[in-house]
Length: 247
Image 1 (cartoon, rainbow, N blue to C red):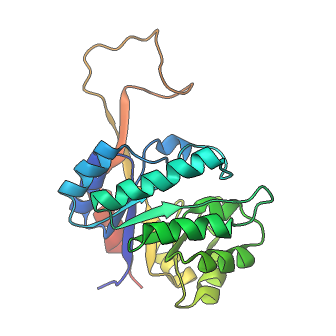
Image 2 (cartoon, one colour):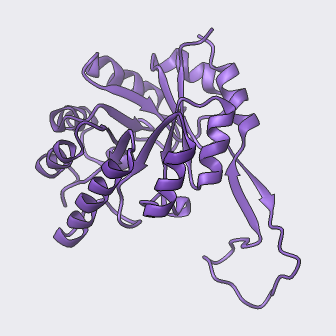
Image 3 (tube, one colour):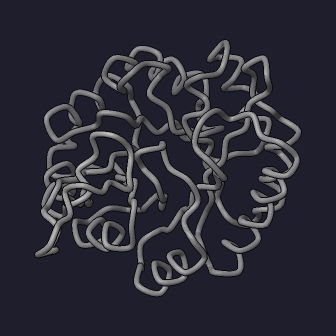
């Protein structure tokens, strides 16, 4: 039996429940996955918490784009952390950089302290930071419990060597959790290559909308997006990834 833990990046309450059904250990709950994930609404978090018995971590990200936030955006992040704590979330997921591409240690440390006793993961803002080994030490200095990373590469497979180096450097001070492109056909290889014990994926599949009428002349989303197809976490895919995560 593998001792690997799987976290699912869930973009809806529906996906949260599919992750749970598939045997995931925890969800990272996000909205707007096409923008890399933003903070879901209070109502979504509340409903997810009522229905989940697995871990619920909520991303604290007020917008898409870069990770350099104004004082106003930082205040929003603080308020969202307080809301997550009141709703009974198990953890939050944060990431703030300076204009020069380094970890903003003072701000992140303050968010970690505000979030206590919830767990705190530092997200893939790390992957666009300068000097990964220094960035790792900075993340550890903030008090974060976990680092989500692709090893500063497009996918975790491409960043496997760096992920191994991060895991070795972190030791037992921080959990390094590979994410980006983690699939059933490469999870066992990633386990062996990185030495990590927790992995992150969305395990999503598209399915058609149940709308009977579709107006082809009006588009609400980004160009090229099929607004009459939904993409959700699939319980079967979650089960398959876990089954193949053998050491």
